[in-house]
Length: 109
Image (cartoon, rainbow, N blue to C red; front, side):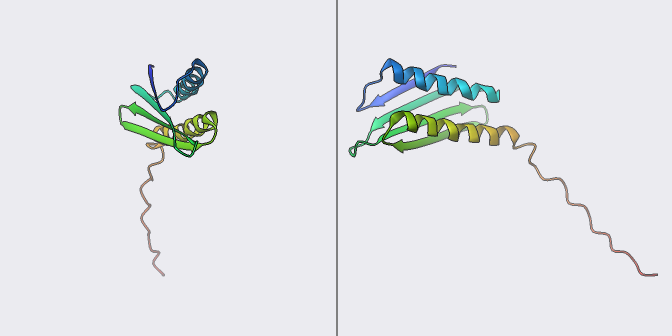
């Protein structure tokens, strides 16, 4: 899986790149067919760090973003959001409701 990382108003250090790639590696445990990953982070004017990730899967795309003072905390938060989305996507077919049983009225004798 190739991760495309883009930084706006902030430099991409090797430590940041390694941290992001390790978080995306964790998502592979869901055994979803991840087509591509796009990660974008930027520094807002109020010194907050915004991290956004888009993962393309055969059924569509998953998007998560987080804003935090600490870039690593924002990355961790986005990874948790994506894990929840992948879990929901993978178990969606299992969660379909079974047909409701028909109500049978008993006759009094």
